Image 1 (cartoon, rainbow, N blue to C red):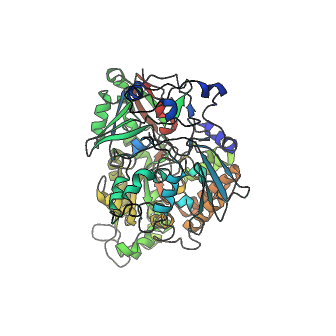
Image 2: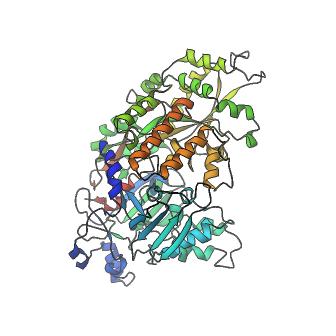
Image 3: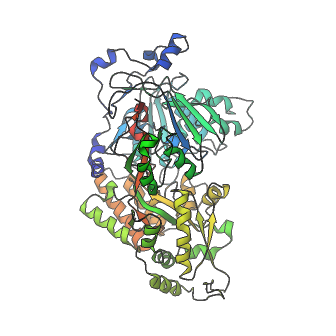
Amino acid sequence: MRRFLKLVLVSLVCVSILLTTVPVSFAQRRYRESPMSAELVKQGKLPPVEQRLPQKPLVIKPVEKIGKYGGTWRLPFWDAGMGNIKMIMYDPPLRWNMDYTAYIPNLVEKWEFTPDGKTVTFYFRKGVKWSDGHPFTMEDLKYWWEDEAMNKDYQVVMVPWWAQNNDRSPATVKFIDDYTISFTFKEAHWNVPYILASGFWEWEPLMKPKHYLSQFHPKYNSKMKDYETLRLKSQWWNNPDYPTLFAWHCVKYEPGKRVIFERNHYYWKVDTAGNQLPYIDRIEAEYVVDPEVRLLKVLNGEYDATFRGVDDPRQIPVLLERADKGGYRVILWKNGAGAWPGMIVNQNYNVEKTKDPWMRELLRNRDFRAALSLAIDRDRINKVIWKGIGRVQQGTISEESWHFQSPQGKKVFQEWANNLAKYDPAEANRLLDKIGLTKRDAEGFRTRPDGKKLEIILDVTGWGGIAINTETAPIIKKNWEDIGLRVILNDVYNTPEEGLRDSEGTYMIRMAHTAEMDLWTYPDWVFPGPNNRSWPLVSLWIRTGGAQGEKPEPGSPEDRLLKLYQKGCAEKDLVKRHRFVWEAVQIHIKEGPFFIGITGGLPMPVVVKKNFRNVPDFGVLGPWAIGGPGNTCPEQYFFE
């Protein structure tokens, strides 16, 4: 993973580098296509492949070798949003490369900044088409910006956080020609291109085919009296009519059962031999919520490749034991977890909703959070839950992150990982007494200062694997009860309450899985960003451009952390940015923890059938922002 350090320097020069170089003679050669596409051309239902590809197709170098066309990739999904499916459909304007050493062009051929860093211009590939054959141009992005993002009547899509100035006003966007767009900010914002390479969520709201969606927009269709139809039709992952730019597009969706994707005949990538990608014809995903059922299906060889389907490293021994019988192989990728499981302590506990200002102040009390951390017997959890394969530590991001690879960075990380991570119930009790929680009820539990019952509610979520969380939560409950805190375990997994408590900021503490590599593209585990759960209402304020939520209180930890992030975005020197991260980590050390970790350093099993090829041996699955497995180019996977 030390290769990741190269990103510090490589990112400075990679703006114009493609995945591979296209020889001059390559464009003159005839492209090849799948038998499925060729048959449609023969029937007159598709134009020739040369007319379907852009002027300069992106050339992908296969991991092992040139693949074969055909086949159906079977895999599971377990939530309606199909997050694990979306991580396969990873095609933002630029992307992480396969070994996490650089950001590289993807939908764009290049991007460039003005010297002051305030304007960034993107140059998209000419001739890219949607999966229905309609040209993709800046008219589509103009529709996104003017008719959805800037439309105050349509709050489903808003101005994204990265397209806002520091005062939360929107950037100035110019549509220069059919393939060129620029964003201008009041301050330098060197991070914008890299943020767009994050997972699927930053590009997904922008992927708006105007020719399709405008028919449901009141501005273009007077029969539409509201935006509800537009909202329902805007989900590309379950709408067979929605054109995409991905390697596959939805052709059939059966709610609660399965979803089928088929090849995009207009996909804009080829391999080094001139074969239009993808190799695989179809993806068929079945809805399986129960992780035990998913495991059994994997063991029985019912899936061709699962990257997050078995999200429990404890199953690695049984996966290896049954590999020959199931006809699969197990590849151990990095997890990148800095806290698995972890617990987020809500610093924005919503008083308007809960009517409990005292609890908000308690959760914001550093001594209280320190007591919670010191009371946890991490060694016991590692032995009982993880069978000793984890590493006891405080909540952090990934140790492999490029922020912590220098000698000083390693020192900062170790201090962070060790902070308040020892088991010291005596000190935890002392801290609770210190903050005035000295009264106890007849059962021996601490009460509020006024004598009323004090209950700490721990939301048990599926974030990081429901099995891990449900098995760990009772131990945490017992640890906290041992220092006199009455604890309620609130199982919200896969319920409407889980999302509601999250969005409204009404949870006290919730279980999570913290894993990230780059805090500048996904800041939320350290800095207040659009998805930070320690400060959920500040995140809402960021997401909505200041229209909703809470503005950070001047001088508060979240205020200082946000200012550090803004300074980092304005710094062109990537190496210097690390110092802002280290400074932010010191706030977490001295004034946190804002999220409490238990263990880290765990592997993630990737299970693929023996005939499923071009999957690399090295990868990272924990952090979603880096796009795994999408950054390994699933379009070049194939069946041998």
